[in-house]
Every structure is written in structure tokens, then in C-alpha cells.
Image (cartoon, rainbow, N blue to C red; front, top):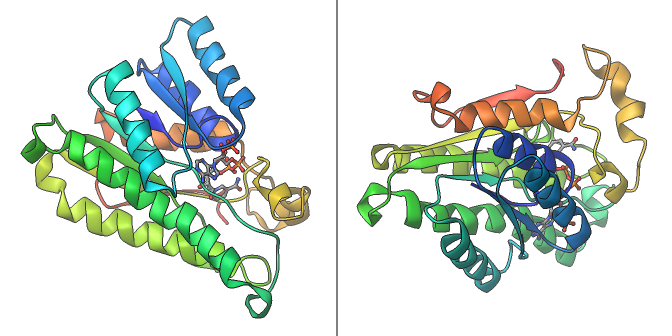
Length: 244
Ligand code: NAP
């Protein structure tokens, strides 16, 4: 199993849950090597197998290098969680630079496409693979639009949803299921990178359940979609948003 952005936040919770479910896990990170190594150490301490792999998912040669390292160290790939994602400081569309738009779309959209492509090349029956599952992290922002905050991020997640639906249909006969999870307001560092560390607390009252979610609550949905329990689910989404 490869979890992109697996060193922190939701990705770390997914990596730990996947290891607890018996998967050997490749924990990808971009810059925060310490956090990724800590996840690997926690998995090893619990008797599991994991490695940390650095790669910027938006860079094709780095993605190729990462998948080659997975092949060499963990063997046959069974699953991919396209979790790596980023957002930029809150602002209205009229102020967004082209450089910002390119970075958000390259990371969230092109990164998910490149990793999905490499996973399909390994898991598809027509490539000699044995099938598998892909889960893409979308966001409730794909439906809500994130006005005044980051419409670019919301649009990137809309693209991730179209990737999920199209790829699911394209490779259903290859033994690969492709699904998505839409987290709502989850307690992670991503809100600080948008310039508002207290964003979840500010918006909690708008959540029908009255609270933000925990990364582990998102990981549970991801793990279910990866598992054989979801054997007849493809091209679909689970909202993990407290009813928002
Ligand atoms: P986070 O705490 O900010 O962590 C983001 C992770 O993505 C980090 O591990 C980071 O690596 C990695 N990453 C960022 N850019 C990357 C790149 N170019 N290449 C490889 N890895 C990269 O975010 P999070 O809240 O856990 O979010 C995880 C996913 O859930 C994202 O796709 C996000 O859009 C989605 N989501 C989150 C929420 C929420 O409320 N938290 C809501 C909806 C959707 P480093 O550790 O090396 O920096």
C-alpha cells in the first residue's frame, strides 16, 4: 500500500490504520521527513512493515522513482491512497496568481493522476497485475466551492472527483476499484497553511454534529473502501463531514 502525504494529518492516520490491518505501507512525504519517519517507527514498533519515501507527487520523475522504490522494497502493489494535497492562503479568485493556481492544481490534480497511472500500470490485469484498490482524497469543498477561501483548491478536488469516476469505469474490468472520500472539517495542519489555524473551531457550529472530525475518522472510511468489504463499490464517494 502506498499512502501519499502519509507523514502527517489524515495520511498518517491512514498509514497507521493500513498497517494495523496488515498492509506493508510506503509512507510518502514531500518535505517533512521527521514526521514520516515517526509514522514508520510507530508501525515498526507495533510489529508492522513500513518505509518512508520522499517525492513531490507533482513531479513525474520523482513519482517514477518512488514507485520503483516501492517495487523493490515492498513487492507487489495492492493499493494506493492519493492523499497528498495542499491549499494556499485564503483569498478571493480575483487576487490569485497563475503561480499559485499552477502549484495547487499540479499537486492535487496532476499528482493524483501520476500516482494513479503508476498504480494502474502495476495492478491492472492487462499489465500482469492482480488487481487492487485506489482511494482518492477529495473534499466537501468540491461541493461547497470554498468561496472567499480557496476556490482553486475546491476546483482541484472537483477534478479529483472526475478522475475517480472516470478511472473507476475505465479500469473496473481490470480488477481495480477506484473510490473517493470527502472529508469535511478535520483537525489537521492544513488549515494553518491556509492562514487560519483555528478554522475548524470557527466553523464547528455550522456542522450538524457540532464538531470537527479527527483524522482517524477519515482513515476508517478510506480503509473500508480499500478492503474487500467494499468489493462491489467503485466510482463512489463517502462523505466524512459530520453532516455538513
Ligand atoms: P496536511 O496535514 O496539511 O498534510 C498534507 C500532507 O500532504 C503532508 O504529509 C504533506 O507532506 C503532503 N504533501 C503536500 N504536498 C505534497 C507534494 N507535492 N508531494 C507529496 N506530498 C505532499 O493535510 P490533511 O488535512 O491531512 O489533508 C490530507 C488530504 O485530505 C488532502 O488531500 C486534503 O486536501 C484532504 N482534505 C483535508 C481536509 C481537512 O479538513 N483537513 C478536508 C478535506 C479534504 P509533508 O508532510 O512532507 O509536508
